Image 1 (cartoon, rainbow, N blue to C red):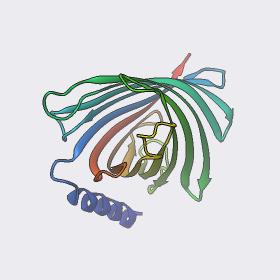
Image 2: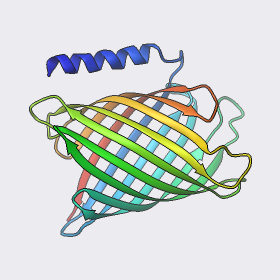
Image 3: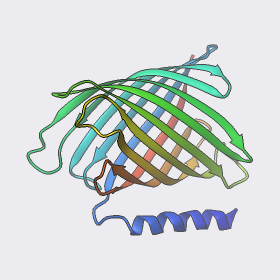
Image 4: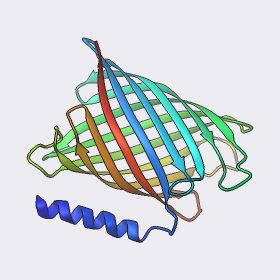
Length: 224
């Protein structure tokens, strides 16, 4: 396990060393408040994205959703997102987006790993643009490598790949929107709180890929 841990750190540092000179920084908070004695929960999320590692604001994303646990392995969500964006440099020409989304999250175990499949549909209302829809599929894998598993004090590798496809009859919009590939290291501070540090490579349309340094907090609460 120690060898696996060192190998994953080496992969992360190698990937980051090949990143562009000025990688983009993302700070993220993912929260879930479970409503006691029910199958419902509330998702709450905040993301702060930068055109640089820090110092040139790109996006502020707020997302909330109502979740329902259909089965132990199936979680559904309907929610709303507000996204405020700025172009790099100056003038930054800010604009905003209102977004409605629906998703299903299927989870299962593979040996000691936790595997999740997320399917999401989005209805997007971007300022000064026509309505558009988008389909997203993400494959997540969390691979623990200590005796604590995915519980408190546990270290793990976090990987995902997500593809975005546009659903619109707008002739100016390509069917392929973007793809995100991520590798990170996670630590569970407690059963309710975890942190991740990772690297993501993103391809948007036909443009050159971008590199991202990611830091996220994952938090579970109970509404008594």
